[in-house]
Length: 427
Ligand SMILES: Cc1cc2nc3c(=O)[nH]c(=O)nc-3n(C[C@H](O)[C@H](O)[C@H](O)COP(=O)(O)OP(=O)(O)OC[C@H]3O[C@@H](n4cnc5c(N)ncnc54)[C@H](O)[C@@H]3O)c2cc1C
Image 1: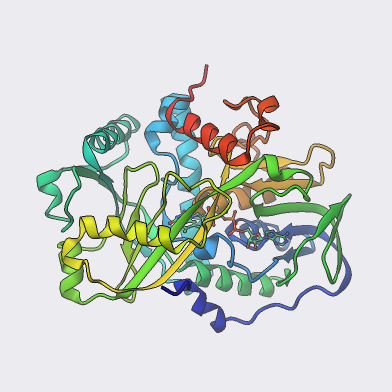
Image 2 (image 1 turned 45 degrees about the vertical axis):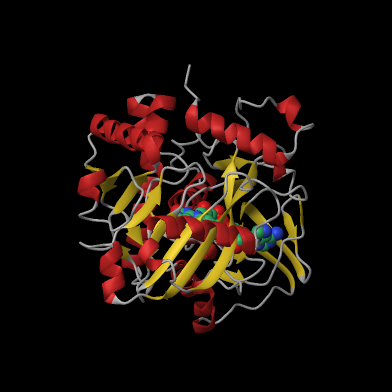
């Protein structure tokens, strides 16, 4: 098994930007070239002098390791938001990643980004009796919210999916896919055209007042957006606000049309299941099968992201559902970090001591991240701040602050995440 990210070959089709050498000034500095950082820079372009720095290549972080399902579901389903906030506000929170999906689609279309953007329905699949209950209750939540959907039982599911061992599913539309590296690198070209100065292979090493230091120089920004996904101690102790889980992906050789038909008898759909560490799959434009997943036991640990054993373990699940494809050869394997906050709602908030620094951290999902990057840019310009109450860095989390100092980060975040997903309720 050779570890290689399927998307990364596309980097060779784009020119990389030079790394920073020397001292420069700007109005707006964006640190981190993932989907959040690029959307922040896009909104700010033309409103001042914008600089973006990225420690590797833009899109080489979580964004370029993702499976690129563009849908409001990420770690939480609609029913979780409704239980937590009630119907009206629950729909409002669900609307945030929905707006993120629309923002990505609108941006790709507006700038004609060649990124394999495609509309594709999604199907949430029930594993076992508990899974079926989860699917049915998601259907009830969608009904209450007035959102369209279609429920499948074990029998009707066979019409759209050739898999074994699922107890049912719920399908809905207005979901999309794309090529994450092409999207980011194409967007980078647009930003450069708009006059944004981008420095790749330029890591922020430290921040002091309004200055960010890199190994080759220093940038003074009137305002700074720190969109580095996962918090770090060296950056004003952001470590306590955002951490990560892990997920793994395998991509097969191209499938023959007969094999595709055996998986999707009536057309391609993006699938994921009801397990806590859920599995997900879809067919790529060149007909390869992408299969991803995680392990509940190791998802929050700081290591194992390159574990071949876990990648093999995830493929066991694929073979359970598709025994006729048990010999299918997988050619690409990689793992990556999914950013997470303590309550699975991203942090878009100011540094406590320096209000010129704004964090965008813990965005679990591309739509959340795109929305939050754009939102951070608006916030820094004092526009549109109606989601501030959701994006605060300090809240009353299940694990109280005093316990955080004695518990490992993996424990604090995993327990807080589980609490938000399954139990949290507004008083
Ligand atoms: C295997 C996997 C599958 C996934 N599948 C999906 C999916 O199907 N759908 C979905 O919606 N989401 C998915 N995700 C999650 C999604 O990828 C993330 O939620 C999203 O990319 C977060 O975007 P971001 O811009 O916040 O983070 P990133 O893309 O990680 O961007 C942050 C950037 O900051 C840079 N950086 C960090 N520190 C510094 C520094 N000191 N100086 C300069 N730059 C720095 C990093 O290099 C990185 O490029 C998946 C993630 C993984 C790992």
